[in-house]
Image (cartoon, rainbow, N blue to C red; front, side, top):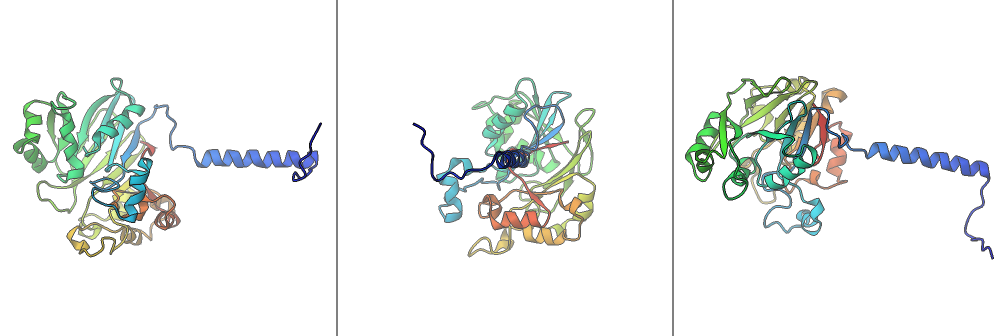
Length: 329
């Protein structure tokens, strides 16, 4: 016996074909919209985002307020400390920028894209001596990885800090790492198609200088400035520097003033995202799209998917970094 569902609407064959075509178009649009930036096949020079959070990650230790709750309830919403990697598919090398407390997980993520031993870890670049940017070096020592002379690219004060203070000095003495000294504004060639240039930026330099990096690949280039006090304190003009590159990963520790309740935010100076967007408001849409905000404090609403903050950034023509983002270089 055939039972006809009385709630089904009878349509003509012509209508059915029309619905089928519309569905297929919508399906294709969805696939395109949610497709990854790059396929998993590695063939080009790439920059890979390994972490987007401020030094302490997300959620932050001892934070049980509502803005941290998602991270504790759903491990998939946890975010790692800010780090990017650059992959050279020709010379089969990979470079990591920042040795974060989350380096173990970040190395694994990188291994999924550029696997060991096919791709050799040819260097780690450090911006400065705050906890989220260098303490991952501890995993390279005899208690863990037992690395063999991994090049660590650092500025002079940072080199002195690592070589004269334990336990970091032990990494140097045991040749787990090899310090490669950088100079402000001087280019370091990493092969035939990659160049890295450090440049100093104003920041709280208790133990070392602070730098950003310009990375130039065979086709594109980027700025990486995860920490700076304020753009107005920098000797360079931010808008002009953005015009010289294809991507600009910029300090977005805090979204707006007052984000830290009952605390003077001048004690932890960073450019607010709202300040940066206002500063760059006169740029063309093409130039704005180069800006990729990164290094989010646990209070920053840019960490929350679908937040008004994310919508505001997109509507103004800028972007925010996401873990796993891959961009051609």
